[in-house]
Length: 374
Image (cartoon, rainbow, N blue to C red):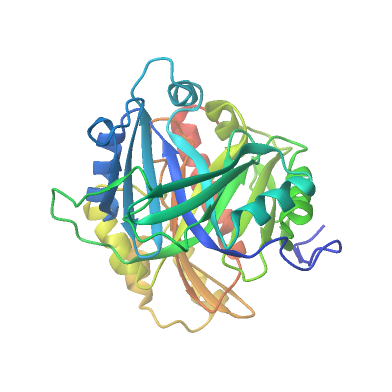
């Protein structure tokens, strides 16, 4: 089977309108230190806080912002809290991908009616800055989608949070928005979760990659990408495929313990500046061989950037029918080889860098070999 694009045969419209990614929440072992990491290394600004000083006795959260992106970094304060067990089982990772909606009640009950499993029923949060409605549905592994209706709220983030500013000098790195979030699921589960997004949320199937598209001599995986109607939300879903050695998906599942978010792609309008700044701040990236650049221009054609700058930063290039894209992938950003980031700059391209798959996955295999998990 070759790479193909398709629209869902079962539904062509969203179950309910989604305005975008409202926030992504990480459960971590030490929220204070992790939030400082994202501030210093990724240029995020602290905008809100919840903890003992605000009346929260069991959970502490730092809200970070850059462009249209909001990350919540959350830790438990009590030894028997479920968040602590989540971190113990999975390490630091993504728990919530929150979606902005126009009407939480309508969205939640439509999702449940179409087969979603509830994470929590609609709740109403209010303070002097207005009110927010939220509800949650479960998706793969222990990940949930929180549905957020915030049209009537003017506060820093949510009721229960206080506005905060950074105590250190922050230099934003040019991040604009979340381009896509990638989930890794167990063998045989990819089609189940594609069907979930199609039938429950009304997403469309954008593209399918099989083990011939995403493979090396040793490992392979399969992937399908689903998207909502306006294209603001894109979820590639990966599962392992048979290979000679353990694939990156299998390694992730071993260390994370179940299905979960593998990586977050964040968009920039100047990837050379962004990546150069990230490197100076200590972020490590996967490295592709230098000979990758010997033929890349023949493959992708004319681009606006200087190829020498891309080679110096080890940035990858690919092209589709709509244009081209630039991309690069960090190494895992915590001790377990699980969550990492993709930095992406699109010039019309709507694809995901198929032409870079072989070089990328060979570089991942080199990292796996160093870890002894290939």
